[in-house]
Length: 152
Image (tube, rainbow, N blue to C red):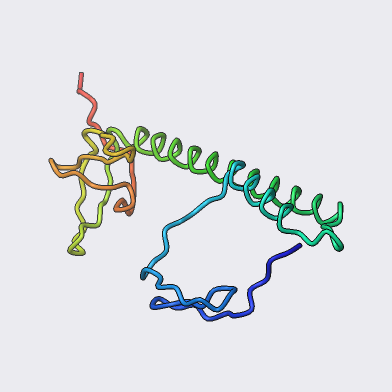
């Protein structure tokens, strides 16, 4: 048994569900994910509500299991990629220590200076240049800091 919607009305102010009921939706829906427990609840509801004269075929059941498995794998991969991206941000920030950077401020000015410190606020790395804290996304260029060698 598969569930299909008979109406495609969907907006920020209201939606018509599969059974013709009007629902009020918030302006932006929160991200929702289904877990294994949710899938099992749906499966039990689907099996208990199916027509005994026209039961769900084993191929439909196998297809649903494959779709759920694919969804679960995709979610795991997305979480892993987010962790890799966060790790890369840490590596980039650490590599900027002591480097000369150009940073674009929120008002459009470009500031140049040496990265003195790297801090992690809420899991995101920030850099300090000339006593001001900036996000990595504000860095427009990086160059090696020129150091003068002592003369002998």
